[in-house]
Length: 257
Ligand code: KIV
Image (cartoon, rainbow, N blue to C red; front, side, top):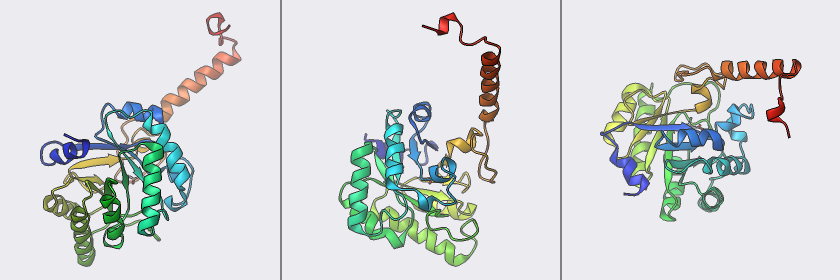
């Protein structure tokens, strides 16, 4: 069974695990555990301190993805198409092909529903596997962050967008900060899996930014659970190194040529 069919087969059987990676070493740890490894454009805020993911370039995504690829053997590797790289069919196809060719990833992810549906169809017609992304859309987010699905009109729109994306042929949809009962309805109505972030356990799988869950990125939002304070461990290793250097305990003979 191919990787995508295998993923869709998991719906209603076992939960799908997805995490982000921006480089090889983290990717190779995740690869033993994740169904999907996402090179998210969240790297703009997590690694580069950008105010928004809109400043992430195609070259940045490609360079990080090349590194990630070296650590991925089993999982489906998805790369975010950054802002302003899929404004029309030809631009989207040219850039998606470049991403796939240069990074050897399995699929690309695009944010949006009806507005980009012809672009999604065009990519899929040209054999580019696509993951959808609905709910909070960081690339087009203006103003304050707010979860999606409070107003009826918004709920209807997101559900319709999800159905349109499924009909267009995406293999799964990320639901970012979608209200619990709406996430449940979308997940029930679709044949393809939904991957939630801040969208409740009703989704078929979950995604988080790895740097958030290991406590490397100092973020405090409701949808993140911190499983580790890795900063504490790095800190203590650095203090030990510093002390050893200052007390001339490192390097020893065995560390020298
Ligand atoms: O950019 C990203 O990391 C994402 C996930 C948070 C879903 O899109």
